[in-house]
Length: 420
Image 1 (cartoon, rainbow, N blue to C red):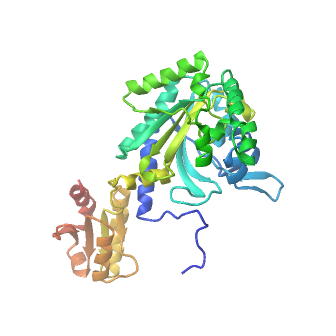
Image 2 (image 1 turned 135 degrees about the horizontal axis):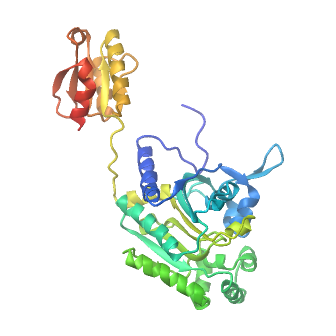
Image 3 (image 1 turned 90 degrees about the horizontal axis):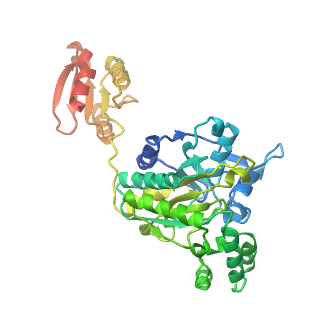
């Protein structure tokens, strides 16, 4: 046994559970691929300033959770704690916004890193699938992304999740609310770090999960009372489009999420079966982020859904995904000549798109058949010297036990017929 273990707060994905994670990623991505979103992949690390400017200097992500270090060349680098800033940076660098087809619609899947206190549903290394629509200000785009996430979760069989929805206003109305909220918060009994946050980004105090803080927020001014007419109209259109699409949501006036770049629409997917880590995904509109990181004005909206927490949500609901066996056919050779012939048959089956495995290592018949049954295969190909002398192999149905001789040249055709 190795003396090394996975770092604290991380995990290894190994078969067969890894197949569930892959299925979740594919299910989340499927509606996006069907809606004009192209795949993008960015480096696992970026310049620290990208996240400091975009995510926000006052956020826990930047101040406490980001893995930041200096390279041998003196560059300040951070492992990516979230996906939006990296995707927008890549889109700007590649001038995708200048191709004349806005919005630029992108989806991604990858690993992210935050130095957090490990617990179930909260890891230092975690997986997300995300989507961004860059360069258009349209309530239909906000609604589209929420609907696609809802569609993905329902396709997986999830039912007990809720969508929380709010508007954070824009550069016109939020400063007025910000000042009113600061006045209220400065009258509370808060620790030094929280008081500092009141000065930098008071909306983040509303997102504080500590009971001592939440109890004092009763009577705090609500952003809905400060929204300008344009933001009210925009938010109402998002709500109407979701309702027309049959997507249920709950208005949550305290929903601000943990990133500074959000404007107007913000939303979160929560699952009550996950305890304290109930958020399985979320996102919102970030109309000013492009300018924050040195780009032109590009109103945008996006989300990220946690693969890890989605898997936990499936477990909480007792949902088992219908994942096909990794192997459909298992070949068992008895003797050197059989190894040569069956290996050729295996190669041909694989080229025909049939998942096939082989009894490697010179196993005897008994052990090889045990391996065939463990593989989940429907069929086994078995051949010995006598079979080959007759120009056949034995095709065995591992469910019924029925065994039939098949001509070597006809193996692929017969297997395809049996598997349907």
